[in-house]
Each structure stands twice: as structure tokens, then as C-alpha cells.
Length: 463
Image (cartoon, rainbow, N blue to C red; front, side, top):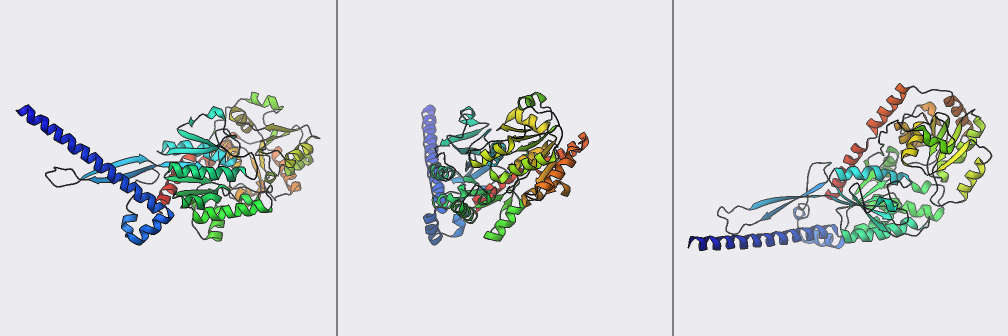
């Protein structure tokens, strides 16, 4: 008899638990539905007219800043409870982030690609469930579907300098609308053209402004206007904005009257034990070459550096131009034409890994003559190796804070020639190298950058 009563009691408890699970699922469905409606353009209009504000803004409760988690608190009634109290259950889940607007990584040429390659694994370490949408023809098969905890999704895009980014971002936003991440993080002002579409589809959007791409020399009138429109859409329609330099932050505040979060690019402090053997394939010798690492595009002003190097006549020195072009064109042809008369000018092509480390480690000097930058990662990388640096006097380069004598007037090849001659005679002490490396590590640390990015995600969720 007692066993029969016990069995009935157990069955009753199981039924109660099943009811509780059902009620919890219904509550969770209602909560997610209200979140979706509150994010959706038409749903938001309906809710604002029919529900008080506390209902709308009590759906998400976030943990402390720099923790990539969302905490949901569910209240369910326990049937048969004798004390009449509700059971509060706290469910913590990772912050789901999708990134869009880059070609791919790892080891894909480009400043944004390098930026995300360093940032993304740290976001995963902080708790993000991170998916990155990459371009099929740019992503290397060796990267696989998951790399250091980051999930890759390949989407097709045309191999066109004009249409590639636009088409890929459009498909990426539609894909994000299906997957419903907590945050859609769009990189650069070109892809930001799709920000209004993402908002219309109910997505929470964060845009990183990496630089005024419409100032790049490769773009014509129409393309520049489209990029300007992308900047306007990205800055006005995103839930949160990230900028990589003070120059960009001031410009955004002045043009669009909106606030943005300043989060610089960063560097990983390298070791200086790279072998010299990698230099042999390029005919280079330790401390006897000048280095520039960049894509072969007009705004990097390679021709200025080639002309100044030819005029400087530095005995025993070579000029190493590291990088390639995504779309070889007349500019690339002009570089080879300008350099073919001087055997001391070396084109290495795109380099990565130990070869790139060796090129940085054993260079005598790094030069960045560019006319346009957001905040140059290659410049920061050169400083992370303790290299002496010469740079053009554009605002983004000046913001780094080099010695004033290490800047030259943009396009002034005569001035650049004289600085090259002076720097070639100098010897950098190990102590000075360590001082530069320590300074760059304290100011441009990727771990701090990742934590600030998480905080920006939280601010977008609170919008």
C-alpha cells in the first residue's frame, strides 16, 4: 500500500515537472517574441503604442561590462507549492555575434582582415559565440569551418572591385536575418551601406569605422558618393559605433552629431627571435634594408618612397616592398616600371607567418608614406618590433605620436630623401627598442581592445 502511494506520488511529481517545463517554454517563447517585436521596425511602433516602456526595456538583464553573456531571469509557478513563492531561474548564455564586411582570415591581406584576425579569438575567450561571414573566393580552405573557436560561413560574391563588397554584404545581412544573432557587427563604411536594411530586419547593429575609404585614390566619383552614403547610414542607423582613431571620432561627431566609442587598432607584441634565413630568398641582409608593408594601392604612395629611395643613394641598402594587390591594375604596373631600373628595390609579394616576422625583425627602418589611413596596423606592428619609423604627416599617422622629426610632409620626396639619409646612419640600441615595444604594448593591447568591444556590444543591446 505504501509502495502504491509512493508510486502515485512520483508520477504526480513528474506531471508537475512536465507542466513546469511547458510553462517555462511558453514564457521563454513570449519573451523572445517580445524581444523580436521590440527590435523590429513595425513591431516597435506597435509596442510603443500599446505597452508601457518598462515592459519594453525589462527584457534583457546584462552582466558586468566586458563579459560576453546575456542573463535571462525566468519566473515560473510551481504547481502544488505550499509556500506560495515563485521559483526564480537564472539562465546565462553566450552573446551571439556575427561579423560582416571583411574578406576573410587568417592570413588574408588587408587592415580590417588583420584587425578581426587578432580581435575575434579574444572575443571568443571572453564568452562570445562568434560567427564571421567571409567571401568564398578570398577565404583559404586551410582555415576550415572553425578556427580558434570562430565559426566561418562562406558566402559568394563577384570578383569585382566595385560590386564585391556591396553584393557580399547584402547577402550577409539576409543571412544574419535568418540566423538572428544578438549583435551584427559590420566593419567599414562600404559594408555599412546595408545598415538600414539590417535595422529593418530587426537586427542589432554595431558598425566599426575603420577609415574614410571614400578618400582612397582608387575610387571614382560615383564610388566615393556611395561610400559617403555608407558612412552616413552606418553612423546614423547603427545602435553603436566604434572608431579606431581620435581623428575619425571627431569627424563623426562633427558630421553626424552622434557619439562613438574610440577603440584603437592593436598589436600582438612579437618575439625577436625570427631567423635571418628567410631574407635570403629576397636577397636582403639584416639591418640593410628599408621596409614598407601594405597592399599595392595608390593611397599608400609607393611611388613617393621609390623616388626618394632612388635619390637618397643609400650605399648597401635595399628597399623591400611587402604586399600585393587584390585587383592588379595600372597602378601596380607603374610600380614595377618605376622600380625596374634599380635592382635594390625588391617586391616580395604578400607575406605572412615567419617570413613576415623575419622581414620586420631585421629591417633597419620602416617607412609609411601613405595619403590615407584609419590607424595603420602595419605602422603599429613596426613599432612593436622596436623599429625606427618614418611616416607622412597625415592626421592618423600623427595621432600615433612619433617624434616630430620622424614625420615628413605628404608627397614631399625631397624631405623624405633627407630623413632616409639621416636615419640610415643611425644605430638603434637594444634599450631603445625595448622602450618602444613596451610603450606600444601598453597603448595598443588587443586584450583591452576586446574588452572595450564587448562593452560596445552591451551598449547596443541597451539601445
